[in-house]
Length: 393
Image (tube, rainbow, N blue to C red; front, side, top):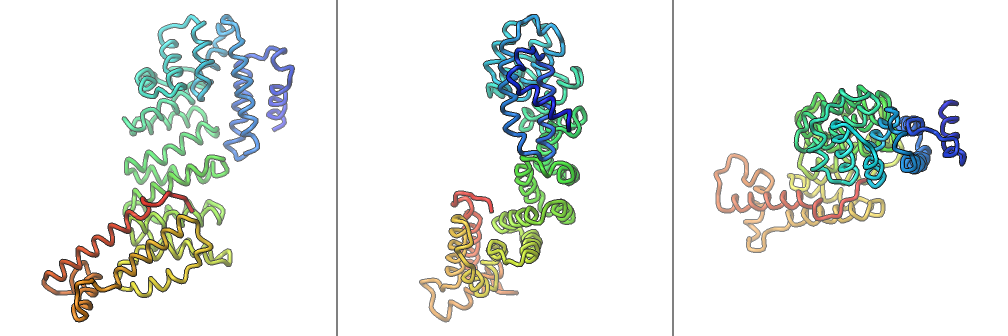
């Protein structure tokens, strides 16, 4: 740690430029700061921004002959692969005499920095990270993998593995592992998703980017509903702080309620309530999400009573809208059809809670009407969240 502090102090000192620090020395210090970020040092974030500005200026002022030192040229590539200033990259690379491979790499990184991802993908897709210096290979594998996520997610995962192999314990590995969680869920690879999620929690939960992991994890659990073992969810949550695990379960419960995943909803709601109980405070969100999917059940009266008992003041603005929408749906189910007589209302009400018909009954016009009503009710529930401006719990 003393070495890290000394290196950063030297780089940030006003005399740094005058002392003529080489770009590769500056990048080394920057990477030390990024490793601290990956380890949970959030205070290092503003230091990273300042270092990037200093490195940017040093690269601009570096004479072309300085990049004849391969270490400095590789540092320029690392800077580009780390999302460097495209104007700086364009300026510096235009002054250099590069061989065909390096020129292609430089053009691809400039396109990537400019946000021209299609062109960057075309230029970099044929680049093999293992063929370059390991210091360049790690960020380069991360960049190319990110570019291929949509077109070739399987290859993207392989590149993320390479990035982790070339740069273990760093912010690069953190990013590669976090992105692997999202991609493996998209590929319906439950084993890979489970493994990556557990590894992330065990190694990088203190990262300032852990909230992005949480989002990918919740989305993945929903996408893998019925396939992923619930014990994996419990293991991941167990590796978190209680308040973090509570929020994770709440998010899973919310999405499960909207999607109608009853088993997952019950599991997440129970655990959310358990974590809330540990803090001696009942969470109204857990009650809300647990009861949303039951709105069209046979116990609508009880569900509505529970919903009416939720303290709206303790909900976010969006969840208050969600609560009101759920109560409206419940009331509409309990209300008899306008064109039905009192004696017809009860059979229709009964039919609405049994897939549109009473048990062992032949379909009738009334029961088919009830089935359509329930289908419409469930459709309304499914689009409630889409009608709201989303706000995570």
